[in-house]
Length: 231
Image (cartoon, rainbow, N blue to C red; front, side, top):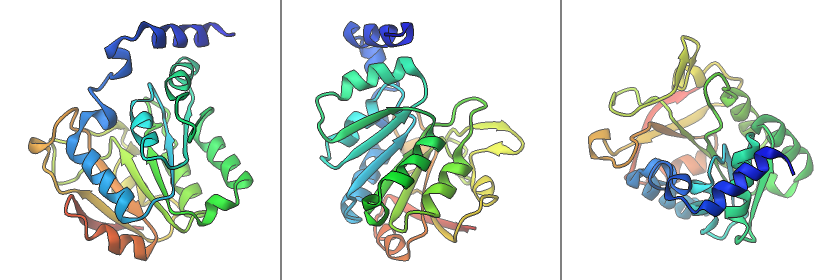
C-alpha cells in the first residue's frame, strides 16, 4: 500500500469533521444549489450520476443517497483512498483513481448502456493549472444525447458575489470559455438565487444541456434561470 493511501485512510479513521466536511456540507454547503440539483434529478428522471473531482467524497456521499448508479473519479491518491472508504457502504457507488478525461474516454468505450441513459454530470475536477473542462464537455455532449451538466466554480456573469475559478486570461470558467469548445448548441442556466441569499461558500455554477426536451424541463425549475445560449 502506498504512503498516500495510508495517509488517506488515516484521515478517514481520524473521523475529523474538517476532513469529512471541508466546505460545511455537499456542494460547498450551498443550500439553494443542493435543492436545485435535487429538483433537476427528479424533474429529469435522472438514471445515472457522474462526478469528476471527488476530493473528500462529501458531495459524492450526498449523490449516492439517491440510490442511482454513481461513478466518481479522483486524481489524488490520498483523497481517493479517503473517499473509497467513505463510500464503501453504498453498493451503487464506484470510485476511480484517474484523471477525468481518460476516465470519460474509457467510460464511453466500455459502457454502451449508459449512452442512452438520462445522466447528470457534476464537473469539479478543475484545480490550479489543471483545467480539463473543455475536453470533459466535448466528451460528454458529443457522446451522450441525454446529458445534463452542472459545473462548479463557474462565473455567474451578472452576480459578482459568486466566486469562480480564473487561472489566466484564457483559463476562466465562464460561458465565453465554454463557447470555444467543439460542442453542439447548448441551453445554459444560472442560479435564480442571488449570492447574497445563498449559504456556504457561494461558488458560482451553471447547468448545461444539448437535449431540447431536458432544456424544456429545466425551464420549469424556479431555482434556475436561462442565460444566453452557449455555442
